[in-house]
Amino acid sequence: FMHHEMIPTVEGTFLTLEYVPLDAEFSRQIRGGVRQRLSVPMMGDDVVEFDREGQELSRISTWKYLDPRKDPINPLQDRREWSHANSVDLMPNGNVVVSCRHVSRVVILDRAKEALVWKSKRGEFSLQH
Image 1: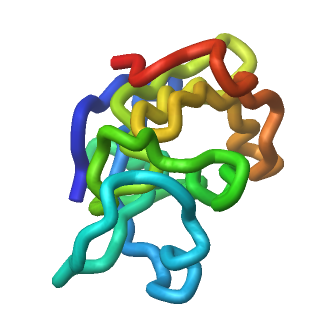
Image 2: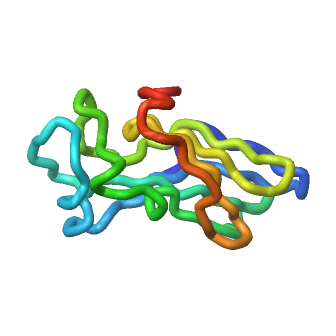
């Protein structure tokens, strides 16, 4: 489901963040967080673009550009969500900036190429909102 924010684009479409369930095997590889038994899958985040009628136009999975070993969940957070994206913004060139709170990272993604352009270094941000 959609969460945190929805922003308009110059094309008249919208960008939003959406929780997506992660594969159980993949989730076990993710380091960090408070260990507990979960009855639901761990969640990641996608950036979704849709039109005024609600038709999905594009999707890019933020979590695919994080590393389960190098981007651990903050030790104070539970393991229900890996990235916990809480902000998305559109750059003038069409790339998106996404803030991933639980891993203390900010990423820039090229939506057209579905590629990582930039990822903040460890320690540059901490539990940002």
